Image 1 (cartoon, helix red, strand yellow):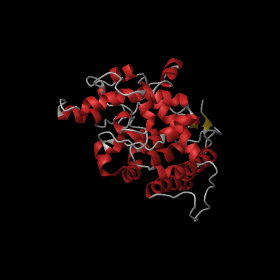
Image 2 (tube, helix red, strand yellow):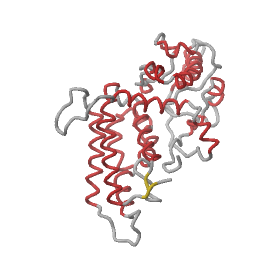
Image 3 (spheres, rainbow, N blue to C red):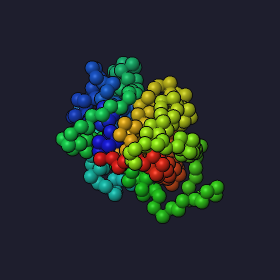
Image 4 (spheres, one colour):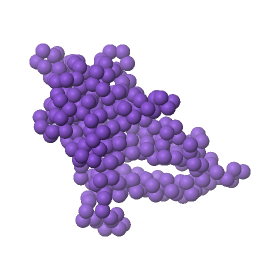
Length: 323
């Protein structure tokens, strides 16, 4: 998992258990680095218990369901999630149980924030997004085991499983021909166009003459030109819109995208880098950039364009296998 520095956001280490979610998400010192803007729980004012696990998957009152269940919006509409929780719960009950535990803590916190006795400022702070640049926290096998018990791990895995379910039996549309099985939205097209432009840029940066066969240093020039914060800015601003850009969401997404295309230091590429790209898609989905109708196109258009880009990068600059 170290080849792409994946799962580096500070909130990734928050345990799933209700009490721990409440304790580690409490406001105060370090609050800005204990949860992501689209993470599962705002600062919890009370322990879990007001909502039972069944409520999270029941599809009933939105106040009893986790924000990553079907389209629930708690406070900030940008925190809406597009995951079909019930579908994932049927396929993988162990993940559903993990989400249930966090759902109870979230429901308790949301109820406390919405209480008439709660000051308006405190209620707003409970659901306000907090954006911060990711940093690497999973450095040992012990931390990796802990991450597997977190809400972030459950959400990411559920997102991957759901995308997999959506594309079963669906063929990729031929170039230039619309598909009767899925549509390509403007936001999806923005990302595909950026990936295609990045692939075309390879032709303008040929490999340099060097003694080493693997790890051509011209890759670093491509990486800087296409994945610097300035280069990613126009694409991200087109995806996020002015409100999310003004709130600072761009800064949290840039590191994941920068680590999606291989290591500029080692000039290598591995599954960790690929997972970083999936993390970026998951984050954009959590922010409401993509809709449920985009899921098939995320795989057959966006991810396909990403893989085609990576194949050309590897064959042109001879990126070494990471790990």
